[in-house]
Length: 185
Image (tube, rainbow, N blue to C red; front, top):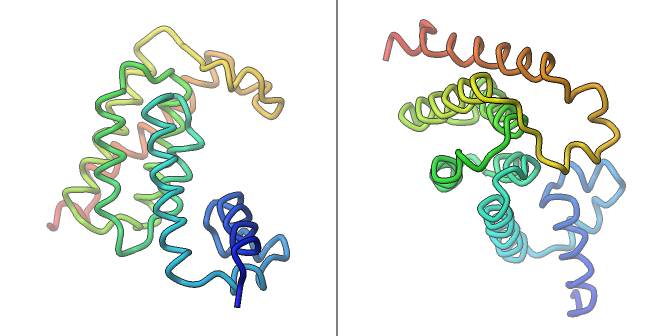
């Protein structure tokens, strides 16, 4: 049995690793993950998801929150994507160019890996990604201050690179509009 102090430590560890058994196991925390009761995993994942969505709504340039939100969706929770898409649509004018590209790249990755099954949801995600990318290419380039502070972003913040990333992702998403699989539906 796990006592309340141990449970709180497990919760902190679980949240720190983005509610991911893979990430916990990779860093040697498989036993800790296995000690978490299933109902607590669900409860903490729901809390984490709500926190990520809140972070995104308060700072739409938080690409990490968006990426993590998409990452923790289970196959039976696809409808929660609508919550994120709604938040992005409402806040899109507040999102900087680089964040728009990062969000669209996450959309592309999810669509390419076929993690989104519902045809209408797939189309909505693709179309919102296209809209974000078109606006990122057509507006003066803006970069959230957080990216400028990250050392690994050095060399990735110049206008030409941002426009190139947007163009590549845009090409892929637009190609999904005309894919044979979608034409057959």
